[in-house]
Length: 60
Image (cartoon, rainbow, N blue to C red; front, top):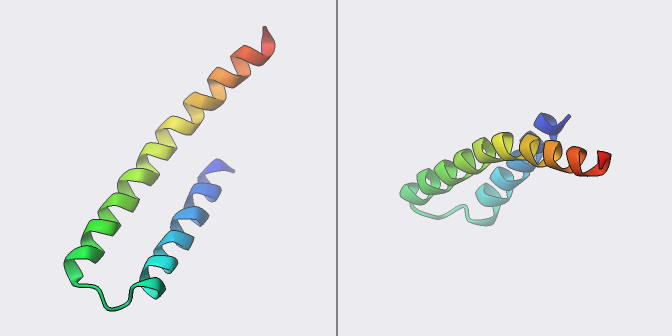
């Protein structure tokens, strides 16, 4: 479920970027695409860790 949420957020951000700033130079498309890719990769790694920590603290 979390993977789908991350993907939907990524898709919304890509759409907002492409329609919000259609006339930017191609280098900015590359920079933003790289940033979004790194942020979704980080989210895939961090969110399960955060869930584990909150589940452990809930059990105490």
